Length: 311
Image: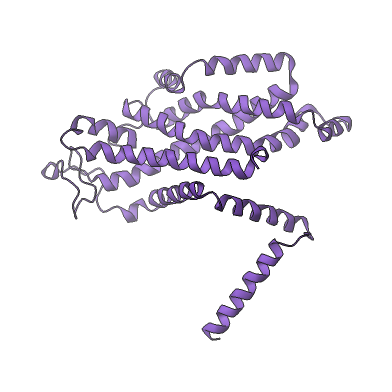
C-alpha cells in the first residue's frame, strides 16, 4: 500500500469521525456523550491560557514520570569539589551547597510535589463532597453541626492549621499530606453544600423522593453527581494553594525531610546563598511558581467547560 493511499484512508477516516461527532441528531447515547466531550474539548482549546497550563502540567508530569532517564546525576551523591557550581554543560542548572546536581533533584522533586498534590486531592474531594452534600440535603441539626465544624476550620489560615496538625502528627510527607488535607476540605464542603441547596429543589429530586428512595440513595446517586463538576473545578484551582502549603511545610522542615529533593526543602537550603548564588533558591522557586500557575490556568479552563453558569 503506497503512502498516498494510506494518507487518503487516514483523511477519510478522520472526516468520517468528524461527521459522526458533528451529527445534528445523535443515534445512540454513546454518540451523544462523545459529541458532548468533543464540544467541551473545542471550548477548552479556545482558551489559550488553559492550553498553556495544560502544556506546562504535561511537561511536569512527563519529567516526574521519566526522572530516572532524564536526570544525569545521582540526587543524593555529595561532592564538595563541585560545590556551588553555576549552570554549565556538566550541571545544567548548577549545584547546591553540597555539590548535588540541582537539575536532577528538580526532576525528582516534581514526583514529590505531584504525589502530595494528587493524594491530597483524592482525600479532600470525596470527604468535602460527602460532608457538604449531607449538610445541604439533610438540613436541620446535621447541617448546623457540620457547618459549625467547617466554620471552625475556616477560621484559621490553611498554612497555620497545617502547621498545627503537623506539630501534632509528626514530621514526614505522609503526615504533611494528612495535615494539608485536614486544612483543605472545608472549602470543598462549603461549595458542595451551596450546590446541594439549589439541586435539592429540582423536580427530578422530588420525583425520586416520591418513588421512595432513601436520603442516602438520593445523595450518593443524584446529588453528588450534580455537584461533582463544580467541585472538580474548585479542587483544581485549590491545587496551587496545596502546592504552596506543601512547599511551605518543606521550607520550614516540617514536610519532606533531608536529603529528599522536595522543592520547598530545596528552597530552604538555598536561601542563605541567594545573594551570592541566587540560582540555588530561584530554580525550585520558579518550579513552584509555574506549577501553581499551570493549575490555576487549567482550573479556569475547566470552569469554562464544566460549570454551566459560565457558558
